[in-house]
Amino acid sequence: MGEQYSYGGQAVIEGVMMRGRLGMAIAVRTPKKEISLHEERLQSLGSRYPILKRPIIRGT
View (tube, rainbow, N blue to C red):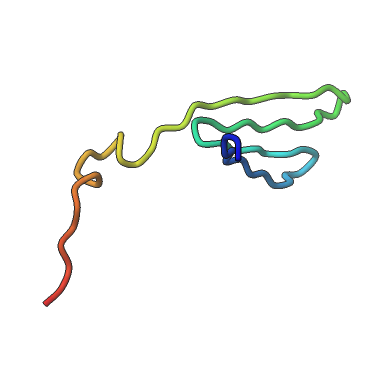
């Protein structure tokens, strides 16, 4: 089996939003019938808040 890809998307008004592991993009059609594109790089919660990478011991 080859590489596994992790992509998802959903409809937005007059366009579509796609999201992957490292980024997201939104493409919408403007009233002038042009395509407007917005791309953004994403950071994981673990990279923003290093404490979330630590294991949590649960129990009584």
